[in-house]
Amino acid sequence: METTRTELRKHATRVNTVLLETCDASNAAPLVHLIDATITLSSSWPGALCREVTTDLGFRETALRFPIPNARHPRFWVAMQEQWKWKGKHKVRFMECGLRLYVGGRDEEAIQFLRLEWVAPTFDNSGVQIYQGAHAGHPHWHIDRSALVGQEDYLRSLEILTAPAPEAGAEEFNEGALVVPRLDFSWLQSMHLPAQAGWMHPPSWDGRTVPGPHQCEPSSVAELEHWWVGALRYFSVELPKVALY
Image (cartoon, rainbow, N blue to C red; front, side, top):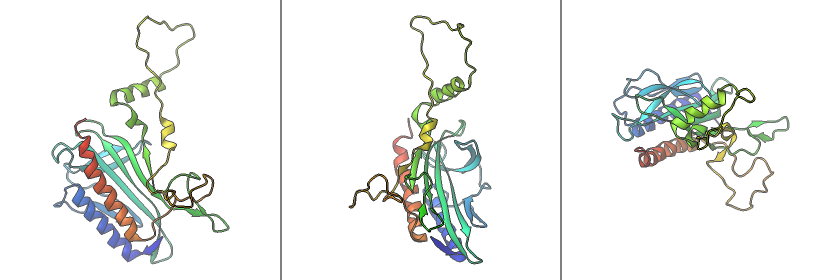
C-alpha cells in the first residue's frame, strides 16, 4: 500500500485522536510524532500519562497508560509504532506497524505480554509476494512468554535458566522437596496467531500455498486506521475484565 506525504500526516493525526480517546488523555499534547516516515509515541507527556518500559527483546520504549482500572491506578500500558518507506519525493509505502501491551502498576516493573503486528510483504525478483515467516499470519498476535506464568514464577524461571549447571554428583534430593520446572517459553515468540484469516471462506487453504488467506497488507490508509481504532477500542473493552487479577 502506498500513499502521499500529505495523507500520512493526516493519518498520524487520526491515530493520535483515537489514542486520546481510548487512553482518556483529551487534554494532553499530541501523543504521537511523525518523524520522517515513522509514527511513534511521544516521550514528552506528563508522568501521569506515560512511562519507560522494556520490550521482551530488551529495548527501551515509551508506553501510554490505559485508564484501567482507572486513570490514577493504571495496570495496563500500550506502546506503538508505524513504519513507512519513502517511494520518491512525495509518496511512501507501508512497511509495518504494531501495538505492544504491558501489565504492571506504577510501582512495579511493567512486563510485555501481548503484541499485535501487521507487516507488509516484500517481493522476489519475479514479483511474487513474500511474507516474513513463510506461512505466518499477517496481521498477527504474539503472546509473550511472560504471559504464561505469574510474575514470581517468571522471574524465578529466568534465574533457573541462567544459573550455572551444578557439578556432577553434588546434587542432593530430599523427600518432598519442591521441584521447580525449567520454565522456558521462548519458543512462543515464534508463533504467529492470525488476526485476520480468510480460510473460513472457500476455497479452503491447503496448508502450503503462500501467500495464504491469512496473509495480506492494508488495502488503504482508511483500512489501516480502522484496524488501529478497532484494536485500541477492543483492548479498552477487554482489559477491564482482568484488571483486578
